[in-house]
View 1 (spheres, rainbow, N blue to C red):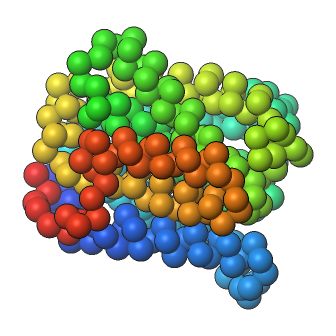
View 2: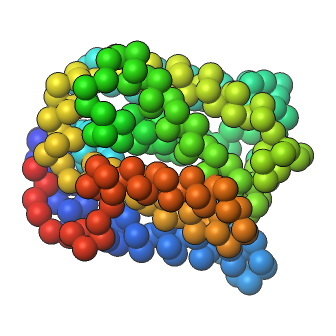
Length: 271
């Protein structure tokens, strides 16, 4: 099957199932996380690593479908570089405690090698891409430096939402910290890793083509909607109200960018 046919099919699948992918999956995911944490599920299902990985992959489909037509050799090289970097920085973090602070995984997020999830890019790279795309929609006239800086700020907010919930449900632990069990060093590390990743993305994609695709593809940030729903709900259950407020701020950005309207999910065309 030709590449353009595969891309069109993927876009059609996403468009026909937007609400299920962007809302139902994260709501069910949050429920499974909480019930797993409370010991209400059988052992075979509680925090099942393959189920976690599968659910994450499904929620990533809109982002993959949106960006697929733009992935030429330069973009592919940039994405491969960020993927390799994510493995390297995570391995260094797990084994040395730098730059995030001492931490270790308490739950296997799919297959693990040397303490690092094989599916790490599926978890990390979309967070950076979503942040970059949101900035592109909200502030399309920013300079390169401004775009990188603003995207990095959003990446930091994303982790301020993600880490407290992940620690609460037992995905990983830092052994304590002032922000819901997360140390300040983790966010210093995210500034470093996020800067490298955002800069690579900035130079991987053609800016004009990406802007045109964003304007034309209504589901491009559905994965970000999933993130807000999943981790906002999980933080709310554990009473992490600062993180909930930050999730609401991300939702406000998505609303302003016209990418958080459940009423229109499932309508329109892939573009």
